[in-house]
Length: 303
Length: 238
Ligand SMILES: Nc1ncnc2c1ncn2[C@@H]1O[C@H](COP(=O)(O)OP(=O)(O)OP(=O)(O)O)[C@@H](O)[C@H]1O
Ligand SMILES: [Mg+2]
Image (cartoon, rainbow over all chains, first blue to last red; front, side):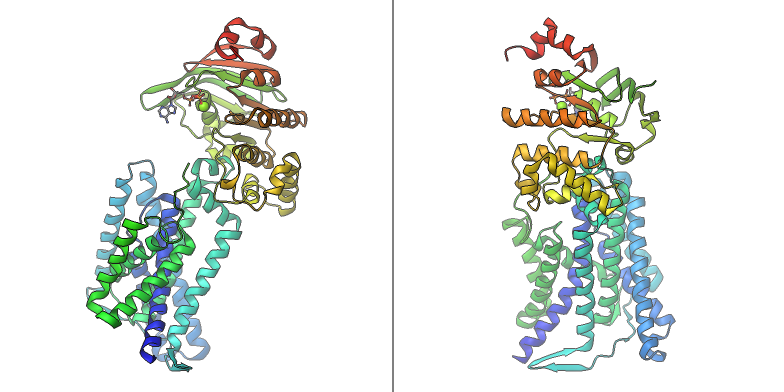
């Protein structure tokens, strides 16, 4: 029972990170029908920018109380900003000019951008994993039979707060409505006065910001950052987005948590070396039997 | 005085195919102008070029003295042209209210937006009953009402409609034409593309007939409705 609950908590924590990354895939896919393969590497970039800020502030050793919280907020804010700008920059430089090109062109470009980012991050931070400053104290709390770390609670709470904010932004705000309009029908959106280019740029900004939050909580949770982290995490998050129904925001969240739980429990039952098999089997099964995903529309309502 | 909409030498191509071969037409403030023509004549192309959805090969477009070639589709919409497109193109996954709100995307005052939506709902009471429903669940006629309502929320100076009666039952189509007459009476200039030439010419002041990307006729609606060639081509039978 104890072990089960521990794996459950683990899975939820992993799932929160995958869900944040999956949202980035799904937002961009929703608006451009592009799988932004570089998204996982934007997440890696987020981990490293947060790491660099925390190291510069010597947050793990010298900051306490309010100072530590300010340091964490600063690292999170820098990661969010840096990833948002990076992602919007990628859109502006690499994808925008390919908007009318055949579908394969932006896809291959995205893979190229991914390799480029991985290599640039390796040049910047080296090929070995870098320890992530241990800024969130991690005493274990006992809630009934459930043992959870304070870190896990912070990670999950931060991720869920971000997702709730995103949900209301997309549902209620004027910009959120513009994003949905552009995603559904670009011409009709421009006919009501929506600047399509600007709306797509803002979508990339938001997707990048989510990757920044994910990069920070991922660094905290895994305790290290590595230039190739985004590859594996990106593929899992992409699987999560497909599982939930790519283009569907609630689906990406649901898929993220399901994939996190699947990884955690498959590691427990059949061993860590098999968790990849479990996760990517899900991807294949979904693509074969329910390509629209759990929450996706059974027919794409494209005009 | 110059026309509200002034189109000169408009040429549009799709790749190598010439769809519009340098057409001229004018719309005066307060008019209803019908644009007729067979399938493939270039009616939709003309409207999409005016709205900035298609790149223009040659020619000039002026709206209230502003050169439209300098603006993108979103800016043209904000200048005061609302285009109700062929096939309605409502946002199917959004509610009726959200669709109407998007029609007033450029309106920053919430109160102003609400009062405009209220106006659109009083013109199409049917939409009020469906206000929280997703647009994709509406019938074809209701979607057409929503598409027009969405255009009206923008309070355009020029309302451009591409086959608003297509696929609608005669009774609903007649209702739509009645609404257009009403909108016009309240001071909106209208350009109307229609297959239903009878109804269009009954409503319009003047009409242009497009053929193979050129203007073949240009006359008052009354004269066009009497013209044997027009009757044979577009009014025959019915
Ligand atoms: N996207 C496109 N690519 C290539 N050719 C096109 C495209 N859209 C329209 N055309 C061609 O341009 C010409 C004019 O088309 P348009 O849609 O403007 O006609 P229309 O008068 O609106 O016809 P309908 O009454 O059938 O709606 C046609 O010959 C059509 O085949
Ligand atoms: Mg047409």
